[in-house]
Length: 339
Image (cartoon, rainbow, N blue to C red; front, side):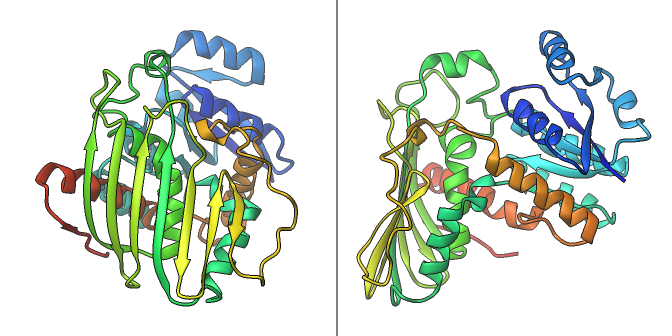
């Protein structure tokens, strides 16, 4: 039986989800829920699917099995809880929510059900990242000592004007970290393990937004390694994101979605990395990684197993970002409690 999947939201990321669903042989698109009349017409025309403006009618569809949550970040929890309450599996875009209290409420609802909830951190599906992670965690670099993370991007004013919720505390939960940087921070945590303490400064320097367009932080990981972060969306013209890991026997650098370099002779590039590509703005060049996440989600439902990124796993990056915000506000070192 094919899985009926609906989408909540109608922005650019919802279009990627729609395209992915339409390419599935074991799933189909059975509706979009949106408040945006202009986008509703566009979706109905482009994706040949029913568009709903009433949530009750959307969730009442008898063929609806799962929902992709693609609306504003600060509404992810509300939309996910509503879907779970109607007996629907959930694939939620990042961040899972913008506050830990909202995430914990969502997790409580999830635990009361037998449903699946996965979170879209598609960069974990990148084969180059998987190779990087395997090499780092193999121990070949020796004792892990230091990791430098850079997410020095650029967003112009039109980016924020095109969607007024962007950069707001209510619906974006912040800005450069919660919206853009969270992808790389998720990889950092997946790679290095959880952070125990954080010190940080965040600021808004160039954009008329509530959230930050600049951030620096330093970490101590539970494994004893230290780390630094620089991030922003006001750093013209924008540069590729990178994670540089230093161990007692050598170092390795992951940049712009590729392994950029390694000081150890044991590693040889499988192919020459493409110089910087278009990743300095984090624009999606294909839907391949999102398609892989959707495949994993459908497989988790079919085989009754956890999706690649569970709600508890997705909570970690939000906890880290909230600790950065708190460290900046209080000018203190913040300890992150592990669940």
